[in-house]
Length: 230
Image (cartoon, rainbow, N blue to C red; front, side, top):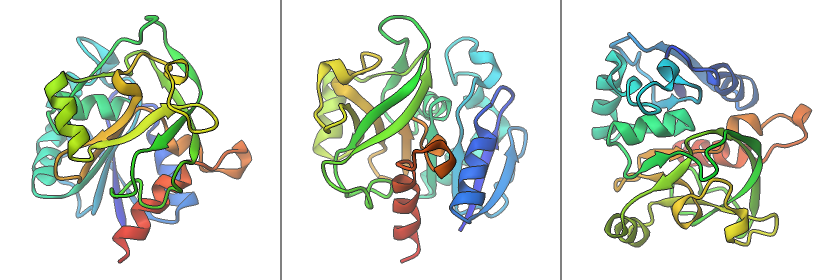
């Protein structure tokens, strides 16, 4: 499979994502610059974490208008697979490719630590290989990661199976105390109605290498590869 990782000015997790996909998951990876207008035949597009354009205005608000995003939006609207992680998730929200918004963390502080998340079903491309009731230990690193959507949108998303992950404790219990940023309903990741565009705040690419003593992120990448190989 050919993955395209989009690099914006201020991206700082692009090489982590490329390493995870190329070196650990053994996939073909192409670097896509924000000024490109060609997705170079990629099967799957990834928007990595970082601080695109310095996070001026709102996180992801400027990157959403990069030349390449016109092609990414077109690709997604035609059923192409797109994953946004952290700042990439913020960009997806700004572009209207997934519902909701990412707001400042409750304590208005940048949070960088390992957290636990729980897949809400096995019915999506990124969660199909995750054991039920397993708590995945995945790092977060964000200042604006508090997911928010209005009540009507949340009901529609819950009914349609668009909630990918919720923050939980080590035993996979979804509790207020396990919510690191005040996200509505402990939401850590969502997808669009067609379930081909995925956004999440935790960084699975930082949890795939044995050298880091944590490989829980591989469940997410293996889910993608297992389904798309069929």
